Length: 281
Image (cartoon, rainbow, N blue to C red):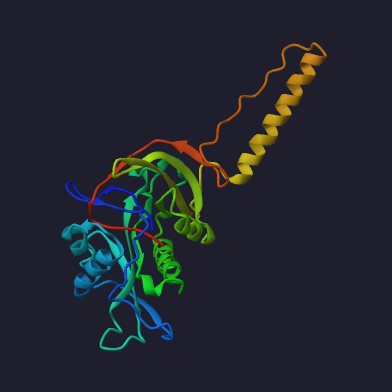
């Protein structure tokens, strides 16, 4: 689904956003099969399977450190999807997953997209690192349910203001999914990705929780727009009637609104064939 190279540690990076290459895989099941999907935390016993899922869905190699951190919960929270109707001892085997981590809001790349009303509190954010569903289990609402788990988790953290992520600009299925789930597309990052010698833009999506909101709400933006238009009328009238001394209020530039995209080049991610995670819808 999507991609961004985020620094995971001094030597490790997170890779999100590419569209996976379809494979005929070990996860195929008959069309007549009716899955019974349930969700649980990812455990150390899932290590081999989650590595195989990544290998199945993406034609790249992922570093073992990322997987070890996921299954052992080292600064990463995760949820797995399983099909309880699978046979041959696979009813608890992962067929989908989502991973995320907590970031400090004031140290994040989206700090300017947040309104801080409690300066004494260390506000946090939840960043979605990876999201994946095996090919044969697509269109069962699994990705949506996994994202809802992340939102519920973030909502239960009193200091958390939002869930956010990046989507590569051509990943239409992921963009549609996040729009459908009421994420706000607040920024377009020019040439954010560099993949196989080619640059790609990225969209930044945010889902506010616990009363978190942008510095400029849609209502505030509309109020500023009306004030600006009125000031323009006053200026035109003053020129028409040769009245001097009329001062036009400066247009207050809004950093962001839920209905506008801000072109911006920031934190470009260099994507290579070696990575530590993936994200796709």
